Length: 129
Image 1 (cartoon, rainbow, N blue to C red):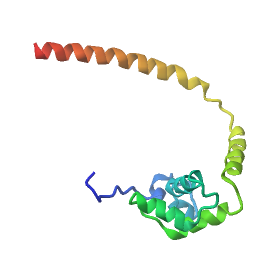
Image 2: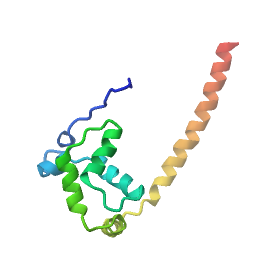
Image 3: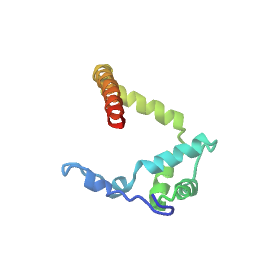
């Protein structure tokens, strides 16, 4: 990307199926606000402000809606990130699932990819000779 250019993304509402409806603020919020909040916490600020979130987002030339940042800060007021993560993990346990079945296809795909690279190298050698 050229210096100073920005990557724009489609609105979050356009990514949602029609049967999903979110309040306007929730539809406008993206993970960049939560990520900026977490970055501030990791930097030692246990209670980041909307201004802190805005500074972080602007440092990477991302747009920041101050009302969204303020809403996030007000929702997280009085809570620690550790508590939020713990509560979130407990909620995810209810979903079950496990995730142990994903290893075999990944290993198979990785094994197949290695052979293709060797064949490509041999073909390249032939073309050079």
